[in-house]
Amino acid sequence: MSTTQYLFAGFGGQGILFSGKFLAYKGLTEGKNVSWLPSYGPEMRGGTASCGVIISDEPVGSPIVSKPDVLIAMNLPSLDKYEDAVVSGGIIFADSTLIERKVNRTDVKVFYIPATGLASENNIPKLANMIVMGKVLAETNGFDNEEGVLSALNKVISAKHSDMLEVNLNAMRIGRDY
Amino acid sequence: MSDKVLMKGNEAIAEAAIIAGCRHYFGYPITPQTEVAAYMAKRMPKIGGTFLQAESEIAAINMVYGVASTGKRVMTSSSSPGISLKGEGISYLAGADLPALIVNVQRGGPGLGGIQPSQSDYFQATKGGAHGDFHMIVLAPASVQEMAELTVKGFDLADKYRMTTMLLADGTMGQMMEPVSLDFDIAETVEKPWATTGTKMEREHNIVNSLFLQPEALERTNFERFERYKVVEENEVLYEEYMMDDAEICIAAFGIAARVSKNAINEARKQGIKVGLIRPITLWPFPSAQFAKAAERVSSIISVELSMGQMIEDVKLAVEGKVPVTLCNRAGGMIPSPEQVLEAIKAANNGGDK
Image (cartoon, rainbow over all chains, first blue to last red; front, side, top):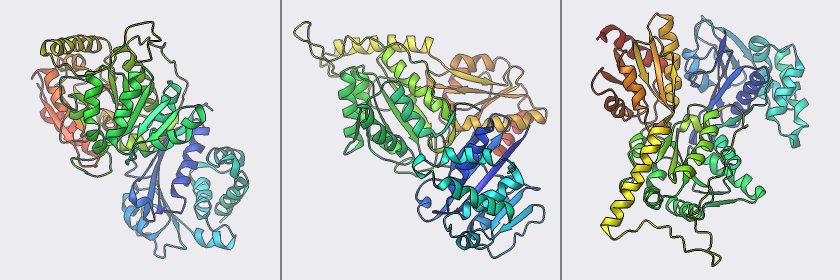
């Protein structure tokens, strides 16, 4: 029996909700129980955005992620706000282009990925989220099977944007290999 | 692999309503239920249905009254302050015995309140919600799957009993995504000989109205209506029991509060505390008999709510003082944590012996 609680946090426009939805779909295509709960309301428009994703072998109880096993912090306010909430032994992924400080906690594993920088270097400025996602999958969920990743991407990218499938997959490879 | 798709609770309501044959939606946007209207706006024109954003909630509920009078399946949706605005129309629907579905994706109150999840419209939903003697059937989903299933059920019950059904959700249920299967059994269509569909000069006029100036006649409609309510109370109670077989402590919770409570129950069980859950799925009719039965063997009941304690009154009525009933709550848009519920369970376990 295993349950992993993810918290994605950043500012509006960084694709926080999209990342979470992708991961939830990846869980669903693997036959897991999943839930996705966003922050909602005015803060989504340019302010902080966050969403909690739970992937579990058991039915999901509360969909509210207050003690994440995995925190994906895409900006400094998000790290400041949620660093202490991560469970002991958990993992923090931080976009080190936008977060200059180090994580204070010593009882968690930390991955610093300069995702926003990597995204602009690779001319995919809107895909810092998926670069981080590549690393998240590699470290927590398994990224050995690109077909599984593609089938989840297929669920979250509409048919008329199918040209973005490969672009997203590439972004995730950059993160995985960083 | 499964045929399930991820949907927001609000979208699941809208799609399920369409599957149930609803082709008329009238609403007015309000967080956190706006996705219902947005989904309807996109879908209804494509399937020959009507989506109309009314000038106000009051207008929307009266449009519902109009379509319901013709016997067609019809719905509206809103959130707490918007539902209050619909109150007059809801009473008129009840007075005219019209079937309709009203969705309330609750947010914190009173007043304009906030936009975060709440269950503080329990009184409003279950005790009538507007002037006059009446009830709505009130369904309380606790998952996106139930958001869809209870929408279909809501239409079926409304038609069957000529009553308004309210789907009483909250902000988390509306906003969260979960896998959902939209493969439903749709009940057989209910004949509606009372509907105002035109006489074709072949029958007497049907009259749909809530005005009865003769008190004798008005009293008669009330008594007749409550005879029908009695049948609903006898036949339509829905609830879920979770780990109640050997439970010594019982949690009463619906919707998101029940989801949080399950986490706490699982943790308490690991610590050797025998606790279970009764989750009302119909809030009206309320599963009073199930709580009365539980009161014969548990030492206490904890009502977990996102309000200052509203359902707790129905739990207390059901158990008739046989066991203590305590409240574990947050309000105003806050949600109890599993830890808070666990603490309440432990407190009951330490002091709750009969």
